[in-house]
Image 1 (cartoon, rainbow, N blue to C red):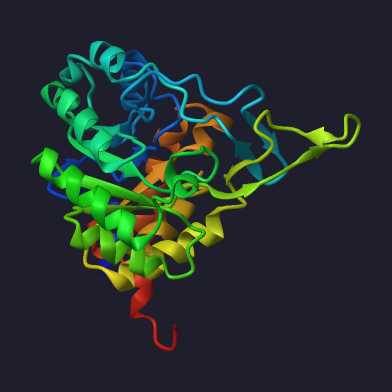
Image 2 (cartoon, rainbow, N blue to C red):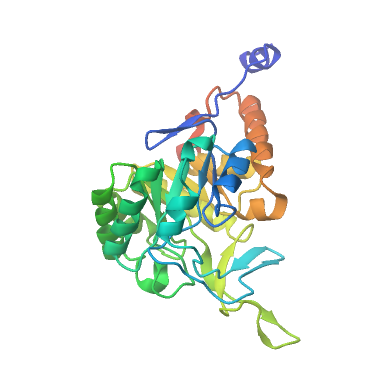
Length: 321
C-alpha cells in the first residue's frame, strides 16, 4: 500500500477546520447572507445541519420594506433576485439575535448603510450581541442607495466605509465585493487598506433581467436583479483567484457552490472559507452536510491531511495568468 491508502485503511480523518481571520470554523462552509438568516432559530437549524459558520440577513439602521414582489425567482441557470434589503432594522434585529451562544457555529452580521456613518451606527448597536465578525456588502447590484447602485463599490468608497467600520469594532471586518468590477484586485486592496480582515468574493452578478413573454413585462417587481447560482460560479471562481493574487487576506468564496467539488475549486482558487446561498434555496440546509462529506472524501482521494494545505493550490500551476 502507498501512504494514502494506508491512511484510508487506518480510518484517517482529514482535518477540514480552517482559521478565518482568527475565527475557528469546524469546516469551511458558511451560510451566505440573505438565505435563511432572518431568525436565530433558523441560524441554529443551519448550524445543526453542518454549516461551519452562519451569516444573518443584512441589517440597516431603520426598517426597510424592500422591493415589491416578486423578489426572487428560479430560472434555468440559477436564481435572479431583487429583494431590496428588506429587514426589520437594527433595533428589532438586536432583539431577535440576542443569545447567540445558542447557535453552534460562529455567527456573522451583515451590515448595510447609505453612508459610512450608518455602518458605524449599526455596528455600534450590534456590538453587545457577540457576533463573531461583521460583513459589509458594498456590492449589491439592485438596491438604490446601497452597494454598486449607491456608489459603494469604488476603491475610494470601499476604503472610506471599511475604515469607518474598522474604527467601530475590534471584531473582524469582512468586505463583500462585486464580480462586476474588472479590476477586482483594486477593490480588494482598498478594503485591505481600510482595515478589512477578509474579503467575501463575490456578491450577485448584474443586474440582470428576465421577461415574461405572455405579460410582456420583466418578471421581478423591481424589473432587474442580481444573478446567483450555477450561472455565477465560473465568474466567482475567477474572482477568488484574482483576489488571492492581489491581497494577502483570507477569502470567503461565494457563488454557485452546491457540491463538495465546487467548494474544493473555491479553496484551490484561494478561498479559506466557502459561502453557500442559492444551493440552500434549492436543496435545503441539509446541503451543508452533503458538501462537507464530499469535501472530506476529496481530501482522502487527494491524500490531503488538512484542507488548509489546499488553499490556493491552483496558483502553483505554471503558465497561468
